[in-house]
Amino acid sequence: YTALGGSTASSSVKLSKAQENVAGPDADWLNPAFAATDDASLATAALDSGTANEFSDYLKVNDFRFSGIPTDATIAGITVVVERDSATVSGTPQHNTTVASLLKGGNLVGFNREADDTVNWPENAPGSLATHGNATELWSTTWSPSDINSATGFGFALEARDLGTKTTTARVDYIEITVDYNIPNPLEPFNGTVLDSSGMGNNGILRFATSSAWIAATGTPAFANFGTAIN
Image (tube, rainbow, N blue to C red; front, side, top):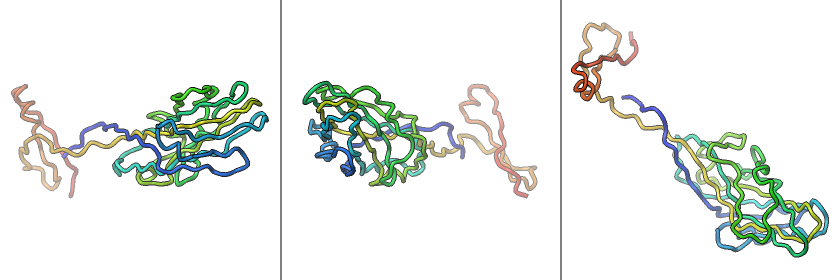
């Protein structure tokens, strides 16, 4: 048997089944469960104290219920898409993202990719998307299928900040994760003919002719030895 070279790339996209506001000293996210689906129902954080650099608490989404990633797959990259915008009560919003991190086992891990969304969140603009990571980005950490498949602690955490002093509200419609992975090709039978094993003593090496397609094209077989000595 011989293994074919290369691998097959696949991806799986999921929305979360669990969402929460991580209570802290900053602005709470109200209705965090609304970040579960793309349906115009919004999780919101009121950044309205009139103080510059006001932060939200963490909006955590997890329990994505991935299940189809093969156990022998290699995780290639993880992409997170966030639909977010700002609602303005007074003035011009100046929201941006200050934390955009993956969760493993419920804990923030790897690189904070807030720099993928450095612009101010659009004002009153449903459908505005920010993308963190990509199909080859591992967020400066390691991943196995078991970290993701059926792992309720796999997810994403988001924190927003209002740079200005106006009364505004940060809004999130949904957060979606795509996992890209590679799977090895299966073993396939060698398409050849065993010629003989004579005259080889105890080497334990079989001699194969190349496939019949090669012989038909060239008129002569080519030969290859497979195996190692087993004296």
